[in-house]
Length: 412
Image (cartoon, rainbow, N blue to C red):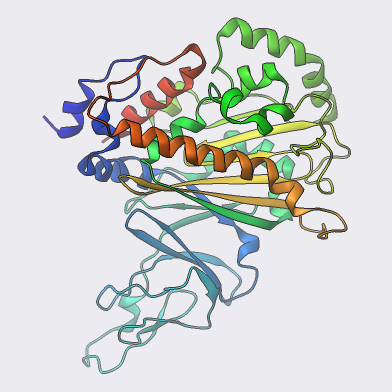
């Protein structure tokens, strides 16, 4: 019996995972291969690398990926591994280069990944055989996705299809990055993701976030549809039905998308919804006032919030005037990172049209609070006294996450 199956036998539905799932390095290694490396991961936005030669390095677990714009203006992804003896090539997080030169033996590669120079090689050496190893990459509406599988990944067009309408309406392809912040978190990545699957903790831990939204939204929709008891959710949806009907009349995508049974069997976990922020707020800001000019195809402010999840590692929140990209990265068994990237209309001008502090405030504060919560959770979970606790009715999405996790771990 595999180590994973041995641990899984001790899991009881309705409770949290047993301790070993958060502490065992062998399990973590299996998770990377079976889950993380199989997903289409949203990693950044094209506005980060606007000009030929611009690049950045995406790092998670043991992998390092160079994402670079070539001289032909096409964006590509390569493993940050020299094809000579395996050294890392790009040592800076981002920059601009005409050539990618390995710091070890000075092998140089073009921005298109071709080997350009390798000194003193044998006469039968063929440079064309030693270009950089490609990483699967796709771009949709300016959002950069990679897939770390060494095999053929799930078809991207099929993957993105259910979410295209709502993402396209926010027109992220016509936006730009105005801020990014990283939150290193000393905890297993599953604790990070679980925290984002429930809003049971929101009223207690996130006073600023909870003050912006209506109380019943926080309770029923803070972590997405299906988190709260069905009766309470139905009452909330009935309450906002006139608002949703108005969205429909205006042609604003607002249908909730829940992953299909067929999709779950394939290891997918996509989600989208659109709801009012509430309390008369027009944007997800401390004051509730807009922080920037309209983004996407909106003609006026309607106080709506779109939540789009590509998978538990990648999601976006969109208001009428800005978007937030969430990138969750597992680095080691007990180390993770959350990166937030804020977007606005590409034509908006700082100070004239938008204020960065207003845009970033809520999710910066909330994510700082989440980091503390998650790290405290991990510390307690390491205790010899820890046993799995019973999940509340407001944490049903955590069980849903576990089921998705188990499905992926057991896929061929």
